[in-house]
Image (cartoon, rainbow, N blue to C red; front, side, top):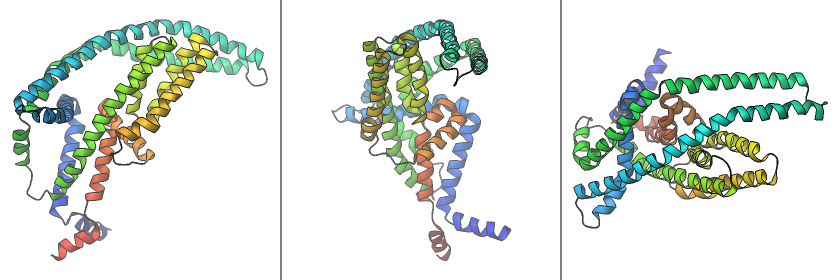
Length: 357
């Protein structure tokens, strides 16, 4: 047993470059796992700076130096970001409040409809089954009510966290962009010289993460705006709230679309019932999902590494459980990182060659 483990260790860790890669990934994971709450604003700033690096490079091509390019890009980014935040958040808050106030009325209508089912379909549904269903629904609603109450109690800390993000993150993004080369040079000084595999994985992930983050942001914006416009044209209630949910649902492939379908269908059902208008809603919602899956995703992520759907779902569950929203957002790049490390890790034959040398 111990001889087998020792042999496996020699085969997999004979290359010092592999040891460097293993230590780098282990230390990074440990820092994120134990200090994720403290490091999250820094990680968000790094992600935004990474996304804005390409616009900075394009502005530099027209003749500006790096400092001027960074100032211009940051100014445009802050204007767009703060306009979106302070223009969209009040509307979302208002529509969410209205929807919460209408929930009791929806529950009453739903209960009335369910109580008519035993009379219409006595061979399929019984009154005891309906009573059990209504009781379980009330239980779930009480649990959700407690969650909402706890969220409102903790709103002060959430507001403080939001202020930290709104003030500190743009400042960090500015300096990450402005002093990028100097910061990278200082960071590289702490890495061992045997870092060939680390550099290989980093080079592979650089383009993949950039393509993913850029594509995912564009996908959220396009799908969110398209869904909002269609909901407004159809006359659906709470169009901005539901459209934003549909846009954010693309963060979690496969699962997100299925989950967001529930509130969209429920709001449409309570508003129109089983009518032609409700059918149009389902038709257009299906078209949005079809365009997203068959046209938008292949176009935006054509250069991304292909991952099996099961691997994507496992990555979403694992990293989402570890780091919440940002874990879900970066689940696919992190899964791609795992795949890149596995592909770059020296095989048994390569390790044997190193030992012979």
